[in-house]
Image (cartoon, rainbow, N blue to C red; front, side, top):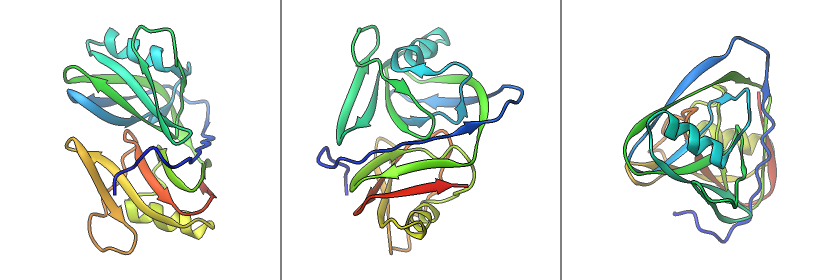
Length: 193
């Protein structure tokens, strides 16, 4: 199934960063759309514009960043004064790039707990801590805490790639630099320890 703009999920990640020596992470961006996530808690919070400008300062050409908000897409094109929303750890974002590049960001490792609130429908999230390893593990964790997760989708090779609950295939690994859509049929909260 493909995520549509009809659902109205909410995600409320609450990552905690402990004071440590800053570390770096790299995110490879392909030409076209990239579904990414912040794998670290940045020292200075990003906005959509500051994220795009940092990619450009490192030689990339990211043109737009989009988030899933109130059941639909909300975009910020680089250089325009509107929709300069905060970019948060624990959420996924689409970045449109005109050419391949590598973005290096600095910050502190994200530590547990990470809290994600689901509405009915689709939630675009990220799991930047290694507590949940696979798509199936994510569905089981949501269900164990009172939710009913039906599917996890990732953006893979320019299209959607799904793991559907109850089917024994496509149990892909979760990566801290990628975003994922999760479809649930009731509101719930997931606390990742």
